[in-house]
Image (cartoon, rainbow, N blue to C red; front, top):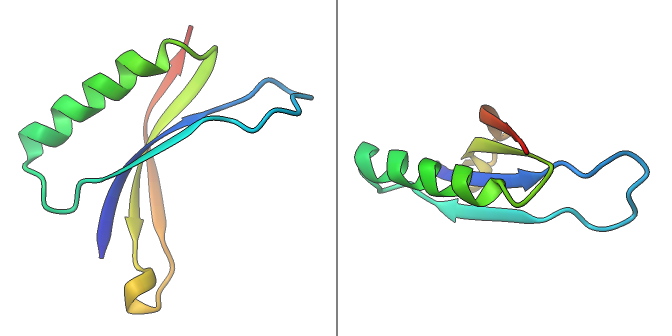
Length: 76
């Protein structure tokens, strides 16, 4: 299983632009480093009117489905 942190821009309704998306593999990171990254992603999310930070548990290598948990919602 791989673990990712993702910053996903939530575009306004009727937006035709592709939303920004950042994915970082944190599978072997320490809890302290993951917490620091969440803070950096939250800071970066301030450039969007609406974004979410998601922890993504990817099980594609095991031929299984993924599971995602929203950690933070950021609105500017």
